[in-house]
Length: 290
Ligand SMILES: [Zn+2]
Image (cartoon, rainbow, N blue to C red):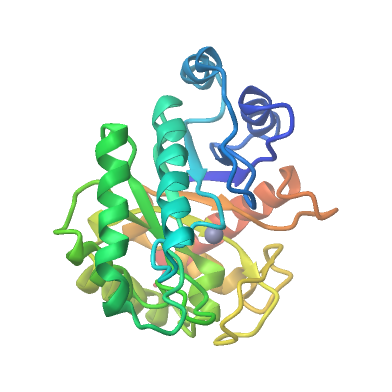
């Protein structure tokens, strides 16, 4: 399992990659533009091209994931928000493809009370358009959500519904966030529960779609339906339960990426990676004991 971390973008793409290498991350995740603004960053095409070579020479980083802009709502019934979301997704995916990213993680959005069924055609049209425009080299990874409001992806069934409406497009995958799972009510406090969860995902979506984990503890209790990440071992999930998922025999080929606040609130650092490695090792040992 590759253990990685979200990295800050100050100084640009190359600086972000160097930050991941410096903390010893096996994988990184970055935003290709400001996470909370529509405006696309004007990356120098040479910098985008050079990124692949720079990553190939990193002694630690084996894969780069991108996270899409938070404002994107592919389910929005408001025409202006929807059009902006489509354009924003397309530019996120273009940059992700250009740097050789292993996947663009996306929160699909919220149907704002209209229901998932009513928004499916809008969602799949936008996904297909950006995949076509980018050439499809970088997959879009739909992330599960904590389940607030009308957010889409609170259950494996909702993620499966989007993929199925998209005709099972092979360029669509899944990213599972441990905190969102917990906040949406799923439990993996025991090995049996963790195993049942993996089997449920396999039955609903197919494990072959699962491309990435987001590894976070939770500031809020199970079922609280809020997206609030905490440092590993300091939240309501705890290291032992996280180990049940991280050590699961069927998930060992995946990267797990930290999106925790870190010691000083600036994001994950070496200490968080060390905690992740310890939890992974303990989880593997737990599964071996059975
Ligand atoms: Zn996440």
